[in-house]
Length: 453
Ligand SMILES: NC(=O)C1=CN([C@@H]2O[C@H](COP(=O)(O)OP(=O)(O)OC[C@H]3O[C@@H](n4cnc5c(N)ncnc54)[C@H](O)[C@@H]3O)[C@@H](O)[C@H]2O)C=CC1
Ligand SMILES: O=C(O)[C@H]1O[C@H](OP(=O)(O)OP(=O)(O)OC[C@H]2O[C@@H](n3ccc(=O)[nH]c3=O)[C@H](O)[C@@H]2O)[C@H](O)[C@@H](O)[C@@H]1O
Image 1 (cartoon, rainbow, N blue to C red):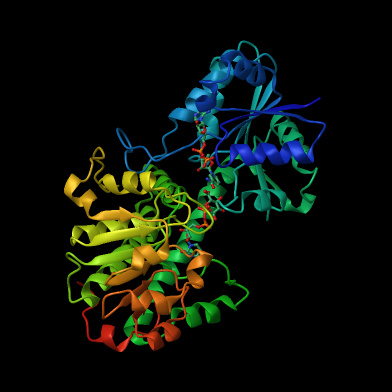
Image 2 (tube, rainbow, N blue to C red):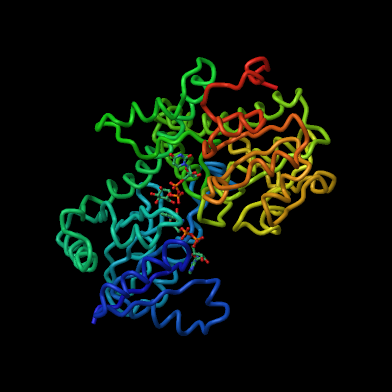
C-alpha cells in the first residue's frame, strides 16, 4: 500500500490530503503539523514521515521580514526545517513533493539538504504547486483546471513524476495533468499568480481613467473580456486585491528577477503591486475629498473586512490600508464583517504597515487611534448615525441590505463608497445617497471635488 504524508495542515495541506484520502481509498494518508504536534505525540509524527513513500510539503512560505532579501524574498525557514525532519527520520526511499509556493530552484536546495544527510536513502524532488483559491478549495481540488508536476529529466525523476501522476489520475483526466521540468513547474506557480494579479491591476488602472473620462469600468471590462483571447474572468475592478499570496508571490518573483540581474523585468512586475497600493490610496482620497476634505471626528461605517467574500481571512486585505488611511485622518470607524472577529480586526489595525521597500520591524499603532474604532455585529448598527459607509468586501448579504432604512439613520448628506461595485448606484441615488462606485461615471457631487484629498 502506497503511503502519503503531508507536512503542514493549513489551507492547502489539509484539504489536499482530505481529497486524496476520499478519492484513493487504497492509499494511506496522514497529515502532520508542528502546531498540532505540540499536542499529539511526536513519535506519531515521526512514524508517518519516516514510513511515507510520498511526502507533500505544504508549509507556509511568507515574505522575509528581516535580513537578506527582507521585504521581498520568500522565507524558507519552515521548508528547511521540514526537509531536515524528513532527513532525520526517513527509513525508505522517498518522493518529496513541493506543494508550497517557492522560488525557482528551491528543489535544488532541498535536494542538497536531503542528499547530504541521506544515510543511503534516495530522494526524488517534485514540484507540484497548488492553484486552489480560498473559499472554493474543495471544489477546485475535485475539479482542477490543471495539475502541474515538475521533476528531474532523469529516469528516476520521470519515474517519480509517473508515481504522483498515478495518484491524481484517480480523479483528474489525464489531459489536465501537465508534466514539466522542475524549474518550469516552480516558476509557473509564481507566473500564474502574477498574471492573475496583473489582470486586477490592469482593470483597476483602467478604473481611474474611467472616472476621469466618464467611461464605465464594468462596461469596459465586459467589452474587453468578450474577446476570447482575453477572457472574462478576473476583470472586476475593486478597491485592490488582497490575500496571503498575490503580493508575497509577486515580491518573490521581483526578488528572483533582481538576483538574476533582470532589473527591467523586476520593475515591470513591481508595478502590479504599486498599482494595487495606488488603488487603495485612491479610494481613501475619494472618501476624504468627497466629505469636504476631512473625515476628522466623522463616523464612517466599514462593511466588510475580509480580503474577499466567503472567508474570514484578513491577510493583506485592502480593508487594512483603507481603514488605516481613514484613521490617519481621524475618522471614527464602525466595522462589520460577517466572519472576521473583533480580535482579528484590532490585531490587523494595531500594527503599522510593513514598508516592503524599507522593511523595519512591525510596531503597534498608538492606543488613541485604537479608541477611534468599534467593531459591531450588524450592518445596521455600523451605519447608524454614520456620515458615510464604505463597502470593502463583496459579501452577498450587503447586496440585499435595506438601504432606505440605512439612509434614514445616517447623517446627511449620506455617502456610499462602493469598493466592490456590488450596489445598484442608481437606486441608491434615488434614495438620496451620494454614491461613489469604483470606475463608474461620477456623481455630480464628486465631479466638483478634487480626486485627491
Ligand atoms: N492559502 C491558499 O489559498 C494557497 C496557498 N498556497 C501556498 O501553499 C503554502 C501553504 O499555504 P497555506 O496552507 O495557506 O499555509 P498555512 O499557514 O495555512 O499552513 C501552513 C501550515 O504548515 C505548518 N508548518 C510550518 N512549518 C512546519 C514544519 N516544519 N513541520 C510541520 N508543520 C509545519 C504550520 O503550522 C501551518 O499550520 C504556501 O506556500 C502558500 O503560498 C498555494 C495555493 C493556495
Ligand atoms: O496561490 C494562492 O494562494 C492562490 O491565490 C489566489 O487565490 P485567493 O488568494 O484565495 O483569492 P482570489 O479569488 O484569487 O482573490 C484574490 C484577491 O483578488 C481580488 N479580486 C479577484 C478577482 C477580480 O476580478 N478582482 C479582484 O479584485 C479578490 O477580491 C481578492 O482580494 C488564486 O486565485 C489561486 O489560484 C492561487 O492558488
